[in-house]
Image 1 (spheres, one colour):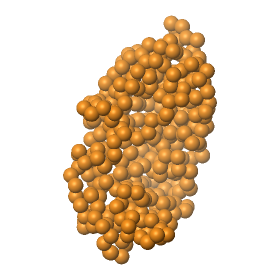
Image 2 (cartoon, one colour; image 1 turned 90 degrees about the vertical axis):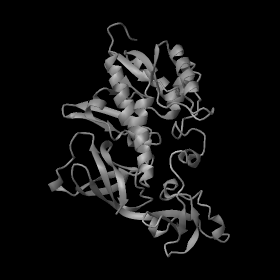
Image 3 (cartoon, helix red, strand yellow; image 1 turned 135 degrees about the horizontal axis):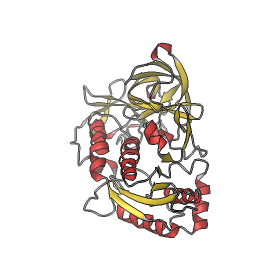
Image 4 (cartoon, rainbow, N blue to C red; image 1 turned 60 degrees about the vertical axis):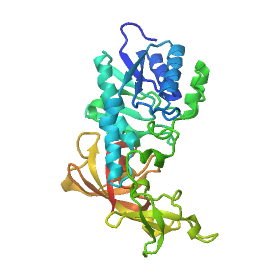
Length: 368
């Protein structure tokens, strides 16, 4: 247990079971642990959209049970400027962003880290399922034991400074382990459902939320051959590979394959759909990316020594895929897959791995 000489760690308590158990484990390791609840969004007037009040109550209950102090901080301005503005800009560019990636790099490991260090903490701790190791040549982000919960995809934009100060005590635990520890501690949130989605959207339909910020821009829904099947609400509301919500279910006869979004033709404001989950237009042999980031601070090999073969994933929980980086500079990259990949989605991230190490990643700009 900690004493007044123990290193001080501030844990981001979200109200969920993962962060509560992370705080407990760090206290068991001898750290002087405090909790910090971050409010990142100012709720709408209507109830039920953002659960910050309920989450704060759960975080306070966990802190009380663990016997640690809990602070609160409002990062809503930082979240708006660094995450939400980029989220809207991507949708306006007809891409599908992943705000969790920016939330981690800009809020949880930047605004929170800076705030914790200003409070005199030596490190920060979180309930992420990831591993960090340290050596003379730098800090490395590695896969968690629980492959189904591993969150390195969302952490791939972290820097050396951020990793040096980060503690991930859940690295060797499964979700079942965590819930078991929580039950043993008598934590009220031991069986609390994992949060899904984005706080600022909450329980409402995504299209209803997006409509507050983006105007309707209807246009044709077409087959690859140019046959018009219906009308879309606006290209921003759709993502590559999407099946539901197209409004063209009646176009196919019973027993025929469903339709999927295959492409967006911005010049004609047309949504291109293909029939069948295995349609060739839904697959790509490669991609192009921008905003390339390497956790080590430098590329794994110099650009003049390409190609570089490694692993990658295009979405959270996707099994790792073999790929080759055939071209990159300080900001952009071009990737080829060993096997064609389905639904390569502009705005999402491609994240690179070498064995169990997360190397970094880039924002997908186009299938290639």
